[in-house]
Image 1 (tube, rainbow, N blue to C red):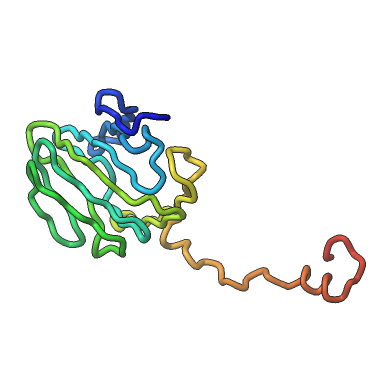
Image 2: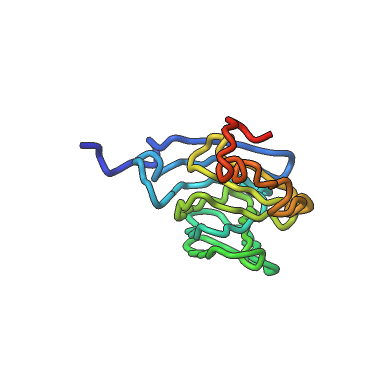
Length: 179
């Protein structure tokens, strides 16, 4: 039987950065124990950076507990100072619950992040007008795709749906494929 315990020092760590404003290292806790429904990690963000763009989840709820450092929580249209021992809940919803933690202090901002892991998941990015869809958990890039807001609903639901397969089956025309 597998141990149901992982020490932070034994957790798999992933780091990433983008440009001047985004950087993090993330120690995966729940994934290291094969958790199925709840994700948990400890995220470390250097001074002057954010781990991720502001975003909101349509399916998942996230909780954050500040372990070290200080910063600002962007939440919807508001900003809130955060410090050690603050607990944050971000429910599923639209841009009104979009969230981002930014390290405004002199030391690393370190927080425990806990989340439900509902897939498929739709994530909105209000600053850049993107929508992301994740179809499977994990870090596989093929499990997520992004759509620019201007391209959403660029095609109608019925566009290019001519019903040829329906007609072929109903008519029992004997063709293997519709023409």
